[in-house]
Length: 188
Image (cartoon, helix red, strand yellow):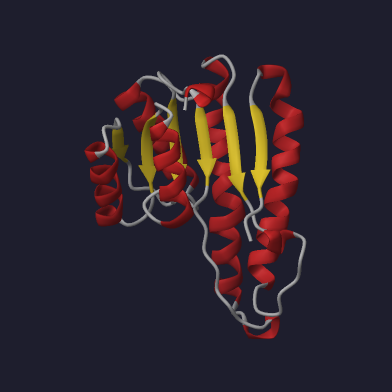
């Protein structure tokens, strides 16, 4: 991993307690970064941190609802309190409610957009000052191929992930002069 040496760097991974997020947390830890696992489930966060620590990583758990702007601010504050800096933010947390468009309730529609689009915005906005202060941070947004391909039972998810791609571009343009890079990955 010498090509990707992240020794001394600190990374937040939202949705980092399982799935793609946990895989990202493991890879970043394997390259030497200290990891903050942020997810809504306290037990899953603790389990993920235990596994990372057992593999030799520095890792802490900060249970967080990314759809809450105040919680996103608290996540960054706790990261700085525990680990002293922030270099990488991976916005991975996401949900999907699989229904045809006409079957979504207003609450379901907003829930999917809130976690998948508002969450990355809130976390990025909260992280920006710390990323800038680190001398050039990275924001990695986990979008989806559904941001460009349609699915009859994923209208809210596709709309949110499409918005996330555009948000990523806006953040990249707005914060490039401060050394903060923003990129999106589209699994699928």
